[in-house]
Length: 368
Image (cartoon, rainbow, N blue to C red):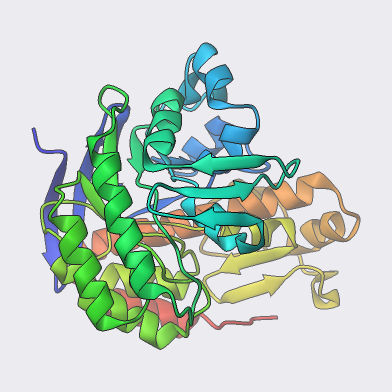
């Protein structure tokens, strides 16, 4: 049986099924981020109840705390965090290269950097990152890549090293049943992006990711890059946009042929008192919600909207009560998961364009 199967197509958009060792994922799929083996504020059963079918773990942070050997000793990442569905682990490359001040050396073999936890020297190579993810036992492992910041003068070198490292990680041992995704770099440079995609696709990974986007560049060039890049990726393999989670961005990349995406935005916004709603973003710290008895979003079926008022959640947020942050986190994740599911249904019905238009008409970037 194929790892990935496209079931419906509407323009460039696709709906499909991704099969992993721990179950199937319906695509398009939003993946909640569980950086340190937890989706912040939530129990795994709550995450599942929201409709999430796959979550992320962070190789960088799990390597340092508590360590892949301890996690393996305790049964692997699924058992450790009590999540029985698919898990994708990133390579740690984004964390290393986004913390550029900690890097002491980059060469063909790998990258040397200082840990953000204690400043100790550490080195990542394609082989070491493969070994960490193998010990974690994730369903999908990501290749070590070089994620250059927006406007970098080192894009060509980032592409070269990303390909070199991908070849080596492709040959490295990995856990039984673990899928491996390659990452294409090149930022918004069309020629470098095409080159990177061609080199990575030639290595025949189980899936492919578009990296080096949503890292500070303007939105329009980012979406133009996705529009040009997605059709160059194999149609019979999953396509992953790394790091997008705002409602507008999610719909834009789905429309351009992306199958999977992740972002810390919904959970981070929840922890700062902001709700994503069908009418835009709500800052619950705003005084105008002090007597508002309505739910966060009339269209939402999450636990927060089913039981609690905006006034109550505002009170919790302003008093720094953890329940308020938990409720907003539950709501924001449910909102994005429902939005993605709605897009999937629209693709199946051949109606993604009107679904997107109607959704964006309701949304405003700042509702409060």
